[in-house]
Image (cartoon, rainbow, N blue to C red; front, top):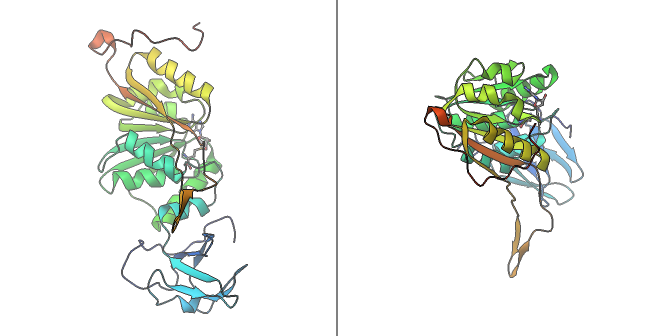
Length: 293
Ligand SMILES: C[S@@+](CC[C@H](N)C(=O)[O-])C[C@H]1O[C@@H](n2cnc3c(N)ncnc32)[C@H](O)[C@@H]1O
């Protein structure tokens, strides 16, 4: 299996039509190992589990299970966004599905909104944002590295089966792009989001929401200080999301031994007018966590 998701026609999981020639499907074995393949008449899929003829799946309902000659059961399903993201080619580290979901929730991203995100990276978060805003919304993804922009475009267009009318990918520094655009929401997955705060404040109207995604504690300390220090942001709060699977097998019910624990911290802030323009006072009891110049 190449590390790149193969190019195939994407049909929405749960579509009542049978699996078809040229469709992208995810094959899963009994241990949960997943492979993305494109079904092709007359082809054979080879793996540790043994060979599987594509023709056994083409024309069959989604969810059909076939045993390989080695006796391994393989189930064929249409890939969810999570299946696709975990198998697609990545230049930059992606935002994992558990965090994508929380970003959409914390930023209160709804159908019809305009969202600016950076950096586009591998396009994983772009896919989640596009689903959240729907066809009546718009996502502007900004990426300063051309090679990462190529990855993001390939992944987003592969998932959508071609160009996406309400998605724009711009190459540049998000601080500059934000200074001349507007948005309901801004999501920043880059190492120094504080450098873009001036632009965020320009792009967001009062009430708008910024979410940053940062892996380390010093970064969270800095963005928090900078957000409060700016004067145009309120409700600054940080959280992280831990998702623990459980093994449920009859009376043997226990937490899974392994989990994806730390990925990154989410810091959310609301755009508000500055105090002198009628906005709220900064919290009085706030302790300074960083030395002030
Ligand atoms: C961790 S990756 C983003 C991954 C992406 N969110 C995803 O889910 O696939 C961070 C990206 O931010 C880009 N970047 C860093 N600083 C930037 C800036 N000031 N403006 C635009 N892009 C930036 C980097 O080139 C990198 O591709």
